[in-house]
Length: 435
Image (cartoon, rainbow, N blue to C red; front, side):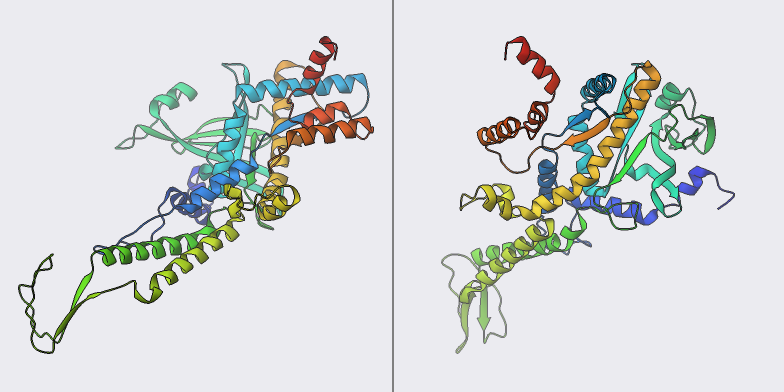
């Protein structure tokens, strides 16, 4: 492989990871049965995998905001933190990060990995944040330290018109796929290389001084760089649920169109199965309708389906109450205990995402410093997550008011905890109104 170009090398890399991505995406999309269906086989698909992943992602991405705090008590540090927070808010609004973060989180939950790319757009003169497809990403890290990435390659395809518009390069590919060009960007902290259709077309210094990618796992597997998808634990129970319900559906259909059974008849010809039909049977022969529901057999099927259904909730860590089914009207600590599996899963994901968002914000501020000359770093960052459980707003306000009155926390922190995105601006407006 030493004689191969980098695009040729990555074409042979991570085959197991890329195959798992495709399988997880197919299963999420509803391709859940194995093999080719037999003649007249009924295959019902109840896509609970998609429902669980969408539900958990919605709980995870509730009202996320970012707070920049000064590194010390000096006026300069406080002003720098305020500038950084305002700059980040503008970047977030320009890139519609609320929607981008939700889409990226959903993609990470399905595939097992997510990514952000932070670059400077020279045409619009602003920071651009995108979410590349991890199916085209390849990473190299230093020895056994997976937190130190020294090279990232991003592979994607463009039309020949897009290639010429973006890079001023005309694809040399010929044949039926000549309208598509394969692009490979290779980034190290010092260099940037661009390959188009296996030809090295650009090689220059990295304009940022860092690799502008933040690659992160959905859930971390110890000693592994690439993450774990939410799909695999749901595969077997989902397939068994589909099979069991399809079988029950067939039984109910046959029970509505009962099977005629003839006993003691050697030959049966011209027997019409219709209302009012009269059959002539030999002596000691008998005819009857097969009742598939007799003896309570249908309840065994329903109980088995209910067992699978409970298993799906256990494996997804999303109790039934997380779907709004609260027959006992639980609230407070009782509701929190009932939802504890979901809360634990959300917490595990938020530990990873907090580090991701901080790294992404630092990249944004470093690019802004370089392009505008305005100082934004260093600052302390804090990610403020919205509550997972339903909140009594009046009670939350009273709690924050008590903490401020007791001198335990500042008014600014109370406003942040209440979900106010711009505490400083809100405080200035209150002072202007004489509050």
